[in-house]
Image (cartoon, helix red, strand yellow):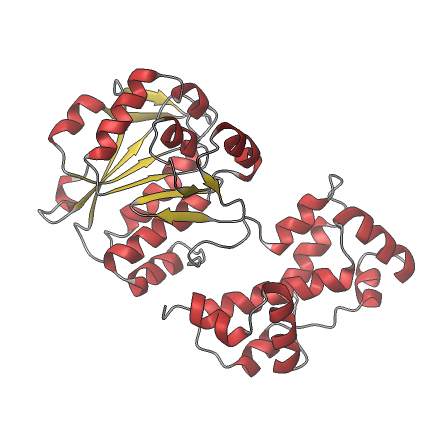
Length: 328
């Protein structure tokens, strides 16, 4: 706790950790709340707590200094966030730990989890009858273990009442930005996102992977990872199969065949999806007209953009902007 940054009106944020907590599950969201104080001192009082306090070893072998749960009794907790990591599964089997989590949650205005921290909330009974998300690798296990929870596999984060859950690792940053937006307005969160060099993510309902990452994860070989990254950075150039084949130093026919084998889709479909994703980010974060967005993302014209976005999301660009744009 930084006393110089604390004011009477500061919102107390408490992160709950345990042995083998994933370091980034903690530090990513923490940085969001810490940086929110830079342009307006005293917005948040950030704390890290473990059941017995002391130094807790993370999965990155870096110890984190923590406050014991007993010291939280005098705190007026605004936001309680459970971090994730491999240690979450063991922590979720500790009855005393779960009792403490239930008691702390009952005293908190808002409760959240990052990654597999959702398992702790679920075992504590705090997600019963709610919608939630966890790391994509654990969604099936989560669904099988808790049949009273609706698992939103494709969400970056889910808000159900005063309980928030976020997907894998860096999704906790998106959730924290959304919490700042809820507390101090979307413009404050957007400024914070720019400072952190990350996107202000729309409220849920989107894939946990960017298109580039989806292309990379589709095949274990990683053969076209470098090419996919190049495509994503050069969307305004001509990206025909022949052009991409030249870039990959292959014949067009062989390239098209191997690309689909290794990524699961044709080069043309991959390029279109990357352009759609780039266009959607501009629809979310800017007021640019469709003609400008189409040009910036490599579409021939705004009509091609409309068709591509509608194919991908089943809504036209205008409606997409209304739902997910910065003015919403």
